[in-house]
Image (cartoon, rainbow, N blue to C red; front, side, top):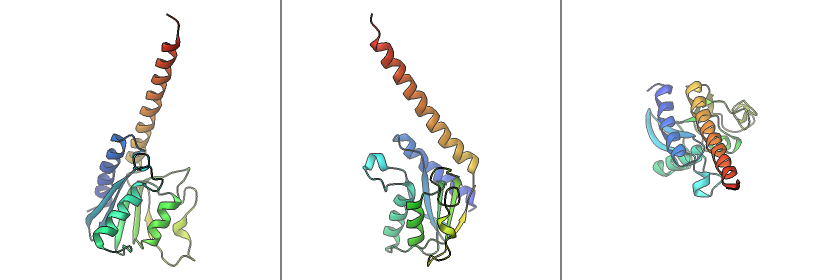
Length: 165
């Protein structure tokens, strides 16, 4: 299956996050061309700052394989991973990480830092970025535009309610 097909599955996971009001990021873990685990952002609903899509998917994959190491696995995620997620991916010994949109604020695959380029680390994971970057980025932009629009409507309604009759 081509990278774009797995990224499309990650986008479907991101929709689950959107539906819950979470930042819409989705992830899938693949081993030998088969999806073994999925995840989507849930830090708000779970009250868990570590419940990023990647961490949720890594935990599910580790549970399925019965091992905290995930050699031979690839992770596809719609947004460039942060430092926390990148660290977890390196510790899991993933063979490859593929991401969609770059994250200029917290990206740890080259946008802000590149954790994967640290040769002194004892495991090297290949990274590939910009897979369906336009689609992944547009998805996030639509979410935040909708969110800003809803907040503006709430402010407007609150202001109208405060007006004397």
